[in-house]
Length: 242
Image (tube, rainbow, N blue to C red; front, side, top):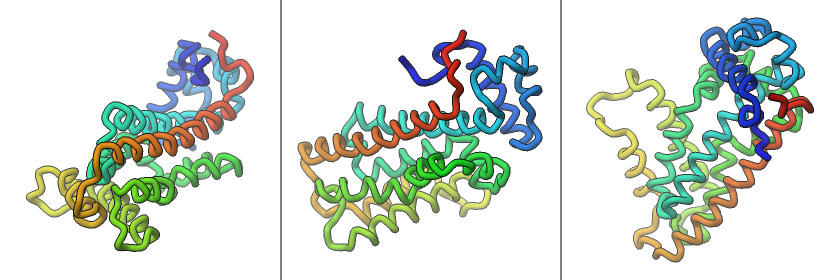
């Protein structure tokens, strides 16, 4: 049975949708459970059937964004193993990350949201494992082991380089008006930068790429399990009520 409450309850799905819109429009601190319930067309008590507090609901929203991010990566790599090549994986990670509105609020300094997400040590551990730097440290050794990353530089340096490229391009692409003019496809620029900096001079064969894809899917699959656990913790026992 799915751990996502919205798969079992239309009311919960409406609550989540309305809460997301209200938080994005007004911020965490200004939004109340009563306002969320009113927007979803349910009573305030109905919200508490699924989430014990507003903070739990917000945590569940953010976790679902992370799940969406991971599911996109897993689906793309699963459908085409060559997506794991660094020049293709890096643009995918940045693009998927840019489509997460709550994460964007964090990047722009939403301290109320940050405070809500960092109440519990167990939740902090999950978020720490899903930071760009942590994902680089988990995935880059896999790519290097299968020959998708060059071996003439120290692995920590390569992890740092990938982290810098992902965060730097993500920042630039989230504010295109501040970037230099004349670039039609920033994703192509990112792909070229990653290829020039990190990929070996001789392309790996299909068997190596397939093996790297399988191991990379395992990394993201473990991250997905952590997020599902976070979602389950954010919900009360009646999460499958209709």
